[in-house]
Image 1: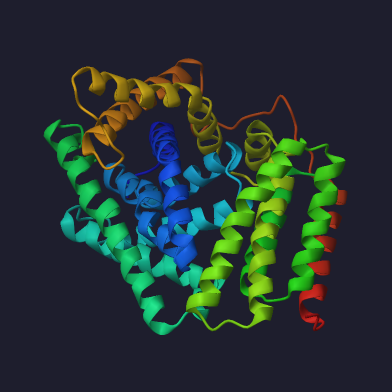
Image 2 (image 1 turned 180 degrees about the vertical axis):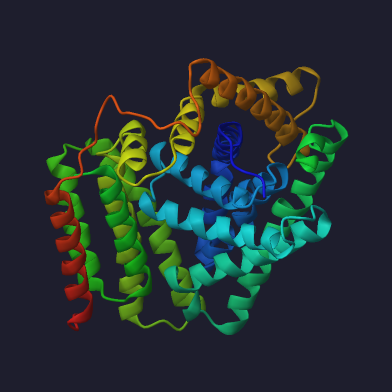
Length: 188
Length: 217
């Protein structure tokens, strides 16, 4: 299995910061969405609708840097950066980062880090959804919702993760593939 | 306190209160965190910011659970206070530790390989450049009449190419300054790991356990 080198570590961190900055720019979207949905008691929907965007660093890092642990490290480093740059959730960001990273990682692990295609991304979206939902089940009290609403949240989350972590990631990696920047890594 | 141990303590407590439902312990943790923050002279503006935003999200979550869920009032109080424990407890760490200290401590005390410690620091210090780069990519596209949204693949594509470029250059720069991944290193600045740190760590965890399991509401 390929080893981590300082170049990959820097790349994963820079990627994570880039994703963080892009997300930051969209920060108002979340706040506005959450504020608009709150009167209807739908605030968690805002969270679940945009969750895919938060989790994109994982599948993207896993797809570009094809080393075991890349997805986890991408999310974890991203959360450390967020923690220091004024993210208000502090140390619990780290836990979320690990949870999201492991979720994305499982998808890649199930293919034995051998196949990098559509299936891998769909699998990764599925594992990310299940693992992060399991975490919110306890942490954010999702287990106390009525069953129907809970399923709606789960479905929303999967669609979000699928669109951002699956479709968008695939489109990005297609562009990267056409630019031939992925090829030497595939052979490695 | 030693940064690595401090981080471990904060993460462990946050993890534990995520799975337990004792609001009195949550309140105690909030009070202790606020005292620590006060002793470290946190800016009032930061504190207000750390209070107002979570207040919105915590209230919205509670409201949502009241409308669509079947949670008991006790559980709602637990959840409400839990959000604030995350924020204030997290702040006791971030307000008293800088990234350089943490990476040094992780390398020396937690035996994190040097390549991870320095690789992370190298990238972290690029933050201002990264922010500027995102703005540049947006502006460059605008000049050609293209608007890049957060769902545009081109935006990520350009940014990833830059990231690949920079990581190559940074890695070469580190090598040319004599950084060797596997070589043993000595430290110019030692981060001490004292008995006192372990005592604070153990005692705090013990107190939380006692609080959580003696049957407080």
